[in-house]
Length: 164
Image (cartoon, rainbow, N blue to C red; front, side):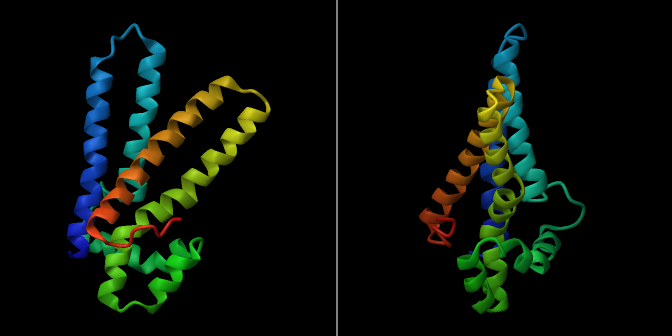
């Protein structure tokens, strides 16, 4: 597979999750405020994966977005030594494939998941029910994306188990 095909496949996974979540939201009665809020938070996380993780709504081509990611790869993969080591030894074509396969999850884990997990623990310590409610939804939604991406990587044999 090419880097562009990988990028499209991983993006399509999140777009499908977002679409399913929007359908669920639209089927919830307006009077069910808490249920709607929970699904809206979940939907926001799928949008975040698209915007921040995949830079889906950027101006330019997906090729230019992947090249942009490749220019930042050493920094993004720095928190993941096994990935960085493998990336450092790869040729240019393989580096682009690694970026397309792994960069979005590395970025999301580093920038959002770690913070959400930490914030959730703090909210538990002070028994902040509202914060725990929101953070648990965020954590579960983004983990659902990671699980889907990982399943795709396992199915294709393209860098599975790199985040273990």
